[in-house]
Length: 281
Image 1 (tube, helix red, strand yellow):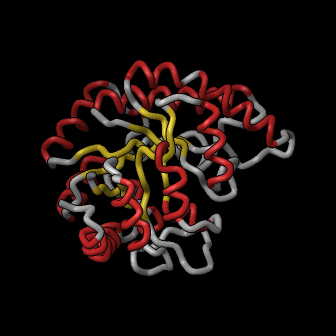
Image 2: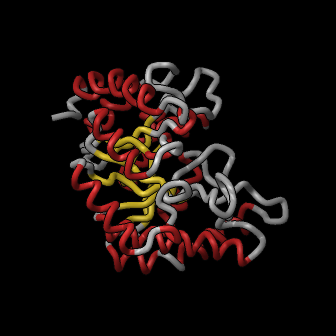
C-alpha cells in the first residue's frame, strides 16, 4: 500500500512543481487531478505526458490514482455529468473519462476515479438517472478492460450515490472487474455511516481510498487529519484485518493556501495510527 497526496490541494502550483512538493513532504505516491490547472487531457499532448512520467520517476512517486471527478475546464465540480438531460453534455463526461483512461495506462496508474452522477435532475426519476449512468459506463468499460485500468466510482454526498445501500447494488449489477469503488472515508461519514463498517461491506469492490477528516456535524468539508471526528484507528484496523493492499490518497483541496502545511500535519497524525494498525512496513 502506497500513501499518496492529491494534487488538487496544489492548484496554485504547476503540476510538476506539486510533485516535487509532495515528494519533499515524504509521500511515496501522488493522486493526479485530471482537470485544469493540472493534467487536463486536451492540454497534455504526448511530449507533456512524457515530462509528467519522467518527473514522477525522478521523485520516486507512484501515481496512486487519476482523479477525473471535477471538470472545471468546461464545467464545475460535478458537471458535465453522466446523468444530465443533454446528450452532448453526457458525451463530454464520457470523452473525458476515456481520455483519462488512456493517460492512466501511459503513466502506469491502475485506476481512475469517476463521479457517481449528479446532482440529480428533477426531470428524471432515480431509475432513469441510474439507467443513464449505466449507459455512459457501457461506453467506457470496454476501453478500461482493454487497457487494464479500473474505473472507480466515488460515492459523494448529495449525488446519485452516496451511501453503501446505493453503491453496492449498482456495482453488483454491473458484474465487471473493471468497475469498482473509490472509497472516500469522509464521504461515508458525511452520509451518516460508520466508515469502518461501510468498508467491510464494500471491500471486494474497493480499488483505492481517499482520506481526510470531517467535523462532528458531518458537514461535507475536508479537514486536516486530527481536526475532525473520523475514527481513524477503527478504519485502519479494519483495513488491516481485511488485508487491504491497494493505495490511499490524502485529499485536502480546501487547503490550497497552505497545502504543504496541511499535508505535513495530516501525515504526522496519520502515520503513527497506520503503523499501529500494521499498515506500514
